[in-house]
Image (cartoon, rainbow over the protein chains, first blue to last red):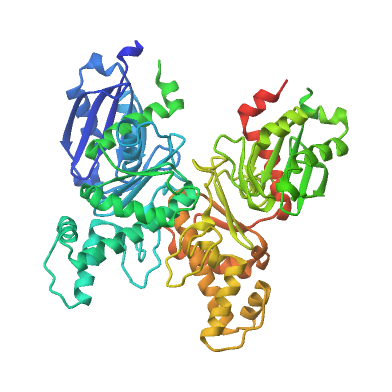
Length: 320
Length: 320
């Protein structure tokens, strides 16, 4: 196969859409598209739909140039890389996706968790370009994380590497997390957690509560609303302290913040970085950066394609 | 050089003694000895003393069989592996130890932090044999840590990998840490922290305080002293929660507890493991073990010798 013509496919399976991209080896997207995610019958039609869509969108001779496919999925991947252990949004349990797609298309497949894919994507083409050691944090409905060390994702022995949303926070509160735990980081540091903290501050002050979104809270901070200010202070203190603890453990050089809350930009990132500076180990202080993610919902397809490149064994195996 | 005859030297530089071991490639110690650590004049005599001792203890023809030397030091190593950034107990700042020893002896040298050396030692010859992903925690005067992922130490971008003693703990207390921070994990989860917690419990209850050592507290727990019980409860809760947060981040399979407090054995390890089970992410729960370190103060020399084996570039370079 002519090296110049080699291609990669990156796929990001979400609960609503499956996103695809065909790109060259340097990450230039030649074509991208998406299909709705069919989660009926325990999501059993997804793998076939994915292959059908690839065959429909990519001409046969072009498909022959595809070196490999990386697939990001919203759930943990077995440590051997073959199976989606569980993906609640797809209604999947133990789906051997790697083998299914490889057999249907005759192309090598690498699976990874979607937060890990986004971390790699930001490293390859986004905010962390040129870095090999980073922590990607997604602050959305929940809190997710992806850790890259020496250019490779830390998947962990039980596929729980980077599950930083479930770091327990010492608190007098009793916030129930979706994982069954109490006071997990994501019960405080997600969009949901932010709103809940604001509501509790108002309630404690016997102030009226009107339904509000995170952006309303950031706006209220600018308007010097004391409850919003106290909410952001608590939010960044809890998150900054947890991230500092992670830095003291894995000591990466870059923290990338993605997810819906990152849209607040410096209104969030500046106070967060200050808190982290307060809490990190002296030899790290002032030697790391905190940046907003750049690729938005494209991070996953970039990272999925890229992981194929880094899984050298696979690549060697697939080059015919 | 005949492969069977190849040897390794492991060295562990401590604030009081420098420990040495000559071993074969399988880790069987053929000779071990130690010398006092001369920290006068900013510890500048240490490197020469170390080489003199090696030449005095190992015959010339035997020294020719030494493939490499690993040295564990009580401080951070520069990310490029050449320099001891700082070692408070030796009064060292920026000592290019690798080059000094290599030049004096003509043998390849690898440096690593002493907690990282102990982690590798326990993996090679101690409690974590057969594992490649582990967290080593040392509970002594302070709290240290070493993380091994896929058989290799995580040193970090600023030599702060595994500095888990400085993970900040959310607390209403205000315990000053040696690093300058407040409420670092080691202010609660070290021997010093344990005693301080007991003292505060007695003080709050207006009970008399008599100077006591950690082992007195463990004995008082057995005697059902309520203050000692509450102290151990708080100690294991804070430490167990922090370790669970680490597990949710790096997801290793084994936690090895060393240092003076580990002498309490199951009196400490059982309640600690229970706390960790409470706080870890569901998919890790019941899939990790917490064990007492086995090698005591020999872990460092084993790990120092072993790191030479794993630093393949170095090994290739040194084989003449």
